[in-house]
Image (cartoon, rainbow, N blue to C red; front, top):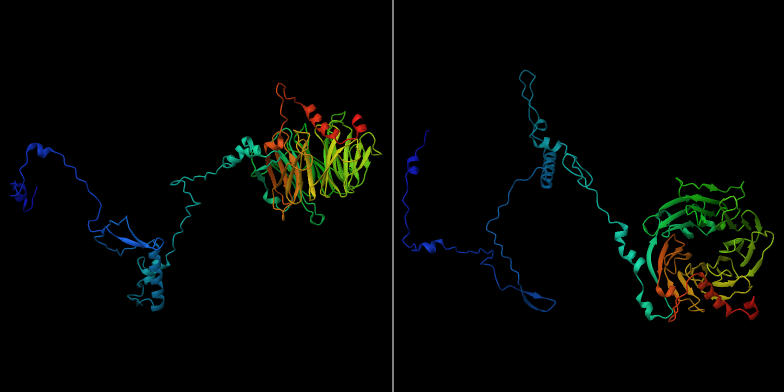
Length: 541
């Protein structure tokens, strides 16, 4: 091994020289651990800085002082060739050559075959770097290379988790303020159902599904004869307010619908063009399984109401419809005036009511198709809705655009109760849990809830649920199980509300007596109210 000069100098040992002022320490002191703490405080930083506060009009000391001390700043001149600054420099260089001109190089001819390459042909020249095409940069938001990246799908918050507060309100919330109100109640807003393609359509029909209590059907069309077009049949669920469960577009506006009580997948629909159709939720596709035509005797005017009936002796499904053409179409035809509403008796199979445009209500029978059993001069304008009571076999309710809601005993020609709601009434519905509770909606955007056993003179709840000037309420319907109502308006929105406890009060049991239950109790409750209004001879009958 060859060693350079100086190896001997390094290989020789060197004697350690003790400083003259070195301290003499014992062995124990040498082994003692001494803790040293390094701080980042700048000893030259000022400690008494104050600043003037305009808000407090005085000088305030600054507690936090910058302790960083800069010893050296050296700015580099290197630029990454793919950076924005490098692109800018190349751009400036390009314009410099563009205006000054490229250096002229004369070719050297030696035999006529060899010529020196120009600047733009050189791979390292500035011109070649300018003309070189920039590589395309991939979008890292929507590009994924399988060899180096993993595409992660974005996580979405579920509707039920997002609306968990409303779900809890629907199931468990009870308005505690009702304890301090004797007769008044409130409506708790829950969900609003909307389909984007139905914003220009009005809600013309609502119906709950008896088998699946969270499912309801919505008919969409238009009441304006000059703006008729396509319609839509939608099915919403309380479990998913964001989007309909079923969507059926129609060639004409839907004016009415009814879901079969036993076969909940069958839906009867009446259209503005006079056709009647039956949709089945079990069938694939968007076309109805049955639809009437001119050959099969469809209506010539809009169909305003359809109702399923019990199966005939051959177990065939059948339903009835009423239209403005003056016909109630069933197994038989009944000549009436322009019909606008229709309802079958809940207990007497052959009896039904028909409301007309003239404001009259006809009590009809399937057995006698040539005459009416009774005619009531009900309203001064068209009868929008007529419905039998769920419990009392003699009571029905009607509403009209003449601002009134009337309660009737079908054995008496005059109404038992008359309520003026100060606006055109779009719809009225009986409660399925009480014989004395019903709700009505008006065109001024108000929902009215009545309980005749609590107050016989006015509503126990009057609540504005939409914009009074721009939106009109068209329909209302009670859920058959839950204390929930759905309300539709002329802008295609359906809003659900939960009834407060005061709107569904139950009678209190006396001490030592068990609270009676069953439909007989509801019948007796309504009968007690009617007996106060009937004549003595009418009560005996």
